[in-house]
Image (cartoon, rainbow, N blue to C red; front, side, top):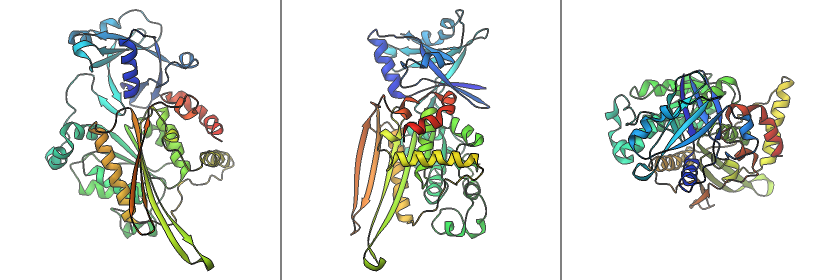
Length: 428
């Protein structure tokens, strides 16, 4: 089983500042995400919560590393007698500032190095470049445009796309064509009215699960990329949850707020960056029900888990969405659960495509370290009645509310799952 340390960039910078100024409150509580082949130890952006230390299954200790040999000797620092699991994080100082490494030690076991995952991007325990994907020459123009380092980051991510409809199929195709590793999640089957504006599918695919229909085309048409995986169970099923646990990035292209809210909460639990897309078209009717006007737009958000989606632009009606999600759990107990994936009232591929590609541009700039550091970003596109596009950008600093129950759940992993309904009730 592979093991890693998950941490956000903002948290790492805060630890570095505390350490360099002598404020070295240790140990820090670590929480667990456990999957079949991977175990992740996570440090919450709020490591000083009073209740956290008692619940945490492990602790984080920090040591100073002033020369390369100090990183190589982390396993020796970790050799003392311990009573429970501990992760030792080496922070570089002086000429080594910006370097780091980690080992985990457990009672009666030999210490072993950990990979470090910062905001979803994995830094190998043994320093060096990320592996080059097969047939990497296929992406020479993309590598030159993005920069080789940013492209390698993209290829190292395990991206889970929740929602395999019109926008989901477009962004899946675009990312697969750049060499990214993708898993598609959607419980719906393809219907006739889905075919017209979705990418990659045709009338012969009607009746197939949406993710499977899209994956079939992508796996046939782009042999150089990693095979697209499919999950056709509900978002809170054990199968889907296992996929989310192992993800480096969640992309949500869903058409209802309940699924978006649940995905945002799970992204916080497991310290997973989230790229959220939503499009909408609204008709305004005059007398006798005749169409009078139309407004349309799209929201694209990149949320790092230092600050949740609700604190980065929010949802139109959080309380009603939380109540609806809670109701879906109650009806599930009665055996008549409502589906979360609802049909859109209308869609335009031109709008979906614009939203998808603006979101991809934001993702590329994030991977290339071009976005303002320690911030979440919201892009809002609106079209006036005469078709004029208006784009606004809002950044949210990583000063998350200490009263937001979703923010406070960040990095608590599996231990937070039993509290999901409690968190939803606090949002009512």
